[in-house]
Amino acid sequence: MREPLSLIYKHSLALLTDFYELTMAHAYWKSGTSDKEAVFHLFFRRNPFQGGFAIACGLGYMMDFLEQFRFDEEDLAYLSGLKGSDGKPLFESRFLEELAKMRFCWDIDAVPEGTVVFPHEPLVRVKAPIIQAQLLESALLNIVNFQTLIATKAARLRLVAGEREVVEFGLRRAQGIDGSLAASWAAYIGGCDATSNVLAGKIFGIPVRGTHAHSWVMSFDSELDAFKEYARAMPNNCLFLVDTYDTLKGVKNAIEVGRWLRQNGQELLGVRLDSGDLAYLSIEARRLLDEAGFPNAIILASNELDEHIINSLNQQGAQISAFGVGTKLVTGNDQPALGGVYKLTAVRDPGQDWRYCVKISEQPIKITTPGIQQVRRFHTEHEFVGDMIYDESTPPAGSAAVMIDPLDFTKRRTIEAGTAFVDLLVPIFRDGKAVYEKPSVPAVKEYSRKQLSRFHSGVKRLINAHSYPVGLEQRLHQVRTDLVLKARGVAL
Image 1 (tube, one colour):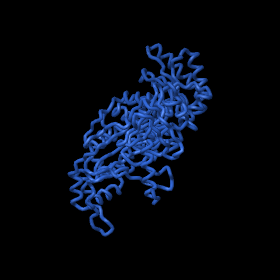
Image 2 (cartoon, one colour):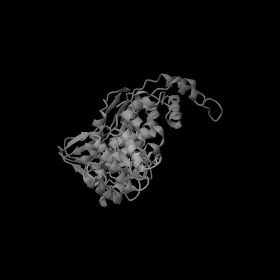
Image 3 (tube, one colour):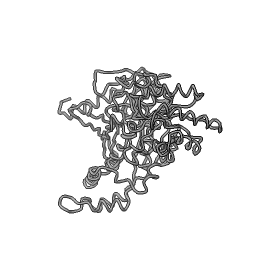
Image 4 (cartoon, helix red, strand yellow):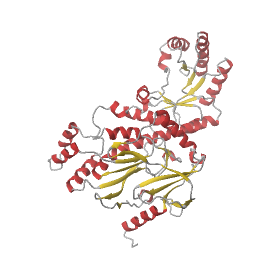
């Protein structure tokens, strides 16, 4: 995969952050604590779309961002001009000099792109001097939250579409230029087969699809003339949009031009339905195409589709070969944000022992998990059976391990000794240098597909999905409980 951010932006992105990250960085430096080591974890609390899973995405963008991370002269000049409430410079010049010469030495682990993930599991773990780890928060959340959301939406579409092609059509409705590119990438990883976004095709190597719009048909005296002229111009790309005037008459016109194509050594690829009763029209279009001798011509449907509408079309017996999904995919229509967070879980002075941290809340779901976390996914030969979040200092031993639901300590699951497993977080950066080799685009997509295939079908239901077992390793749960009680002033 080519480096997307370096191709799109030709200048520093170090200021892609919330203002308070920089004010905290200045305060760390001023207080002499900027070299304190810290561990942060990036995770989300609820599955998106009221579903049963999410697809981790954004690692490629994240690596590109981190490899280019530096404050350039324009960044520092801008920061030097910011004023405090007293009219004086907000940031001291010596602090800005420190930013200019800072050597980034973070250790970062993450789940590979395309991994199926669940609430409370770390998708990214950052271990670094606290000033450096703090500066990354907003950008990493921006990248991972959005791309994970869109990849998950695409995976849900893929589940209901089955083997039929799904094309991402969202460029014109996406949230800006970079939003459209990130959405195209994430949609492809999550399960889409192609995109209409040509720039995404160029940058990422994603297949591109498209033929003509209603304007092409309307610019001619008749629909038949429009189809004929398009066929002469693009004989190897004829999938006709048939609903400009009368959909079934449009199918008949496409068939007439399809006969001409066949006489000239080409084939009609199919027709596209973009309005009306898609179930009825697709059934009738299929009948007309088959009777005319075009059984291989596809019927592509679009028009504000999502996984629920596609599921309904399936139940109605629609004869649709492929789906074009735009707005509701690239905007995450029914859930516009994932809600991932980035929380401090451990801190220490250089060379000293770690002090584990916990944030408490009146809402149990917002109580964080301390430590230096890893996720162990247990599996049988054919299926994943449970994920255990554990602290790297106390990994599960060889005997049976108990994991406890982070929101309900009465829910416990025992993992038998000898159960096969894989640890999800893998090294991405060590001492500021990338150590992870990005897989090819097809490899990432195939990994995502295989991941999802190994989960029980109940986890993948659109509505009332089964809750996949995720829990804290027993000792980590006890550490968390003790820290919460201490924070609340309860004697242990």
